[in-house]
Image 1 (cartoon, rainbow, N blue to C red):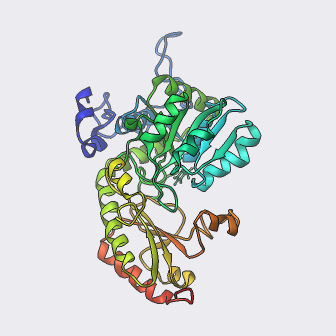
Image 2 (cartoon, protein in one colour; image 1 turned 120 degrees about the horizontal axis):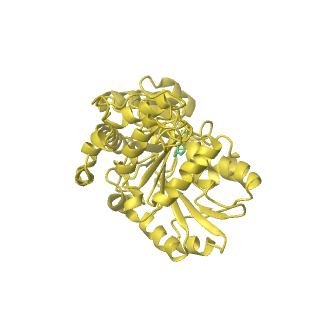
Image 3 (cartoon, rainbow, N blue to C red; image 1 turned 180 degrees about the horizontal axis):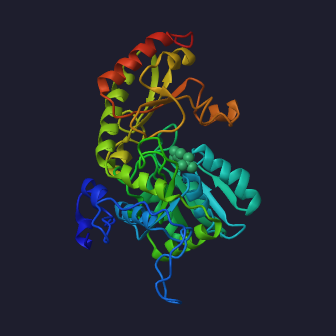
Length: 392
Ligand SMILES: *Cc1c(COP(=O)(O)O)cnc(C)c1O
């Protein structure tokens, strides 16, 4: 594609971005190049490909595609979302300071607090990003990075990216956003001035619950080159087959995201009207505190929602037939999770409740099945859960 393609709609970009047609054969999907090494055509002459830890054609095709989708200068693919996050931390020198919200993906908190605090002496300060004065006050001379997720997991809180960028730019601090929940079809942080977008491609980009992968996309080509060099140094690369699966998944991303968001909106509104549901967390509801910001910042409200169940969680979960009780999110199939015993089980109960994650919170990754079937499944499970004595 020529540069003109950048002006086209994201739905078209999902299919054509990155010019992935194979120039040698015309194959519309790039070949899965499994070779670890590449023969020198002429001794001593520079080569595009020399060794697949450094660069691989299938991986390159994926990276060109996502760089264009996020409006970045460079995409860098990894073996997992966590490896992508670790790659960003590798940009920092030992002793650097990072500011982040407490409401982060559990694996990210583990990497920050249990690994890089010890191994790289990184320091982390957690603040409530609804309070922008607190964000500004948390920045120190050693602060190099602000790490964000919006909407957050599992409470779907919104963070105003443009406002955070304004604070960060004034103090020469990089802003990185984990955009896994939104995908470029829902939110493009680089367009709002952020420096780095990270994805767990395991989720919506792959979209079929059959691959583990990660990505960073950067606004500055020099930072991109540094990430590539660091990734080559530590070896956190995805295999070519996995890179292909993510690229294949992205072809239908726009269609899938539209359906995820449409189904989630219907179910959120329906759940809100049920007696057995106390509170629904979904940015597409007018009752959500971040609804106005979500309308400005996001192109759709995504497919993730959470709700407080006024009933027996175990009975609810056991009665689900279409929603699978499982970790993860973002695949075509609907999943139900229980943060207290699953994604957030390593956080002590008192701390978890202080974070606003009670034992009766259920999280749904709404899939692309017919919404009537999903609603019937929830209806049956709510009936099975009954009402417990917490109701007034
Ligand atoms: C799953 C997830 C990650 C970690 O990604 P992996 O591919 O499992 O390593 C990071 N952030 C968010 C928001 C996620 O959902």
